[in-house]
Image (cartoon, rainbow, N blue to C red; front, side):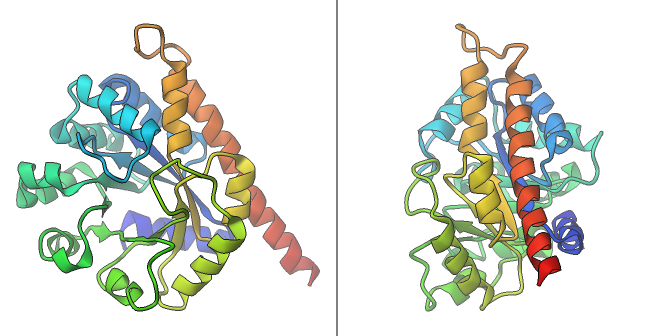
Length: 283
């Protein structure tokens, strides 16, 4: 079992959903980015997604695009992102790490070299948003063979005819995009999301995690009642931005600003588990 599969198995036994946090590698700089990564599990993150900065992030909203620009301006690239994971792993061998981004940087780096270096560094899963199932031979199948989980996105427009193709080589979990559009664009409708998650679960035994637009503990709590995990990204990268000094650099409050939000969100997710347990116990 991968770290991702082990973590979801434990959470299932605990009867609660996962909190998955997204942070952009190298934002606002390498050292602060590493400090944020190290603080996330302590603040309540069960899994961590790390963004691979790219110059043309078509699925990302303004907040994450700005984080990518800050990271790229600071010299962050795919090699340094893999180094970031290696340094994180020196102190944490348990928290699952998923790299999320676009295929171009991986293609330029070289697929075989990337998979070898990512595996050696402690990466567990990949989300590559611009590679459809029709292109599985490019990266998905080699990644699965190398022992990674390859996570697919399902969206509100992924109908029952398309869903089997999306799920065919998916492993680890399914990432359900709760809104139509870019990251951080709108708040998800918990009722519609729960129905969509239930539909996906009729097609797969994999955990289903919900992301895009989640900003508050209450949203996290509501979504966690109907999903196996809740993903938060834009709210955290915005916390980084708001903490920066006039010169655009990290301040003494940057890491704490992110950690405080994660603790609040973790309370929301765990609150959903408590409510569910209470309902079951009273029935």
